[in-house]
Image (cartoon, rainbow, N blue to C red; front, top):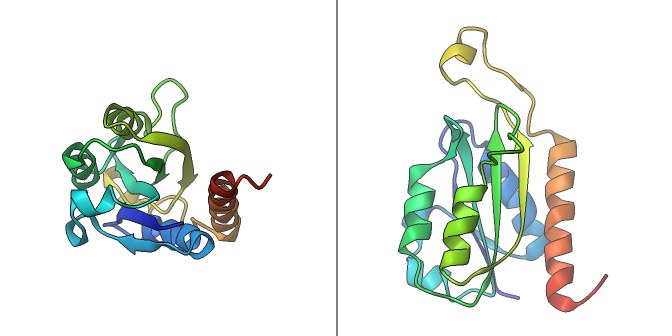
Length: 156
């Protein structure tokens, strides 16, 4: 299975660490949106789209990349890291999932975890979630990726 993870990780490398954990399981390639064309990304069997969360939204570079994708019948997943917990009524991942579905992608799932955050007010106290994503978070990311890989092979 040819897998690509498109990842915007700009503050502390949190999202990149999660992407690399997933890529290790899926034998995938991790790239920033600027390192791959939208047409090339649509040619993969499975594409993950991830970023940190900024003001309750995923990074504009990632969302712009998703908007530029051609119509596809491929498989995708979305992942995010954030300082604050995801709200049940307004998940961080909802906008990219809707964009991907509108492009014809079958979205296989979403993954989020907490991460080190030094955004405005948190900077005053040295940040929050200083040690995250931790090994438990990365183990959960690997398990999520393994389930995606098993879904493509029909393995339970």
